[in-house]
Amino acid sequence: MLEFRKGDLYIENVKLSDIAKEYGTSTYVYSKQQIVNNFENYKKAMALRDGLICFACKTNSSGAILKILVSLGAGADTTSGGEIYRCLKAGFNPSKIVYAGVGKTAEEIEYALKSKIFMLNVESFEELDVIDKIAGKLKIKANIAFRINPYVNPDTHSYIVTGKKGTKFGIPYEDAVKAYLTAKKKKNISVVGIHSHIGSQILEVEPFVVAAKRIKKIVDKVERHGMRISYIDCGGGLGIKYEKGEKVPSPKRLMSEIFSVFDKDKKFIVEPGRSIIGDAGHLLAKVLYRKMSGGKSFLITDAGMNDLIRPTLYDAYHEIVPVKKTNAKKVRSDVVGPICESGDFMGKDRMLPIVEQGEYLLVTCAGAYGTAMSSEYNSRPSLAEVLVDGKQTKLIRKRASYKDLMLNEIL
Ligand SMILES: *Cc1c(COP(=O)(O)O)cnc(C)c1O
Image 1 (cartoon, rainbow, N blue to C red):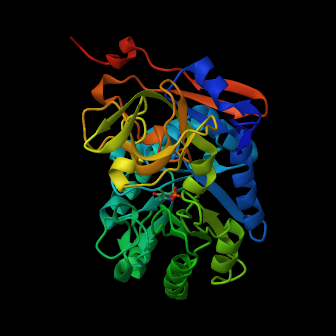
Image 2: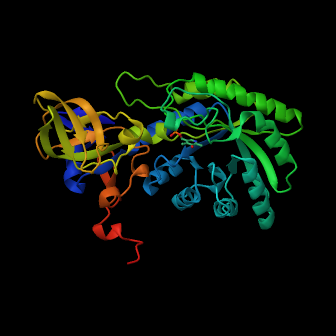
Image 3: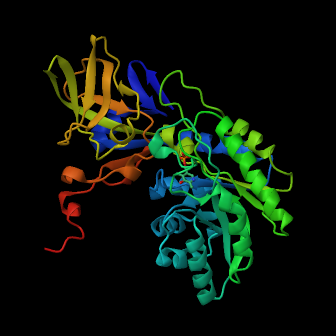
């Protein structure tokens, strides 16, 4: 949804420099149409089987974004009580909410059960005991799936690999059948599914298929014990194109290969996050200063690592584009923020034109794990978020004020 028209960069039908002038910077800007398109791709992929598309809302939990997904028919994949709360407020049907997480507290479990969400993805034997107890207290049966660690190692950043042996996630593969047999004996537990989520920003279908085949083996073994696993929750993790030349498989290809591993009567859940919202959101920043230091050019912007931590945390690449085309000479530059950390950068060694002071840059594809991971480090108030729909813009989160910084402090 980004396109240059007569030298100006547009998102849908709005000039990015106009957004910067109206709402200030730094600001997250989202394209509604891109969210719709991305979701529709999953709908097409899931049309072949029965099931749910649960948006992984940890990638972006802004209420207005969640509401768009509700209107498209999405369910939600949550990781905390707070996310369940946000999803209910946004209007998600609780029967379309799933909840995973290695460290669910008793309070969160009780809240999830009382909210009647679809299922809890259980990650340890001890968690199963706690859920059984709380469900008993509430006199209900808790729907669960076990999150199984299938021991596959996708080629992605080590911080976002979750399905490898030795990570904290899920029930160890060798204990999977035992977990189901344990659940069978619990009075207040009802087994509905099996779950795996192997990692994020995965650009190949193969590790998903390897994981699916390993999960299928567990399903077969468990069902031989007279239990029934209706839902296969295959997690999220499909990558997006951050850099030119990267190839990304379509949701349709991914899902059809996963479907082919399982029997026809199975229902499926998929939990895409990044591939729904990643390329729909961008971070708009202003160049405050330019300087040469140590033989290097620096573009100092008003977007810092507190606004977008992915470059710092994962060494992630985001393409950075000036919102006005210019013939200025390109030089190798670091695009940095105002934070007092050397790790505070949006991009390093980029060939960028020497833009004027006060010009705007767009840090692209920052919709996933952008605002969601932002903080007020250096006492920088949370930034604004703007949603673009055709020619229209709408402020979906106000920029915080200095006063907001001290909201819950007791002096
Ligand atoms: C983070 C996460 C997802 C979403 O991953 P993406 O790479 O953003 O698609 C899905 N399921 C679970 C359990 C997760 O933890």
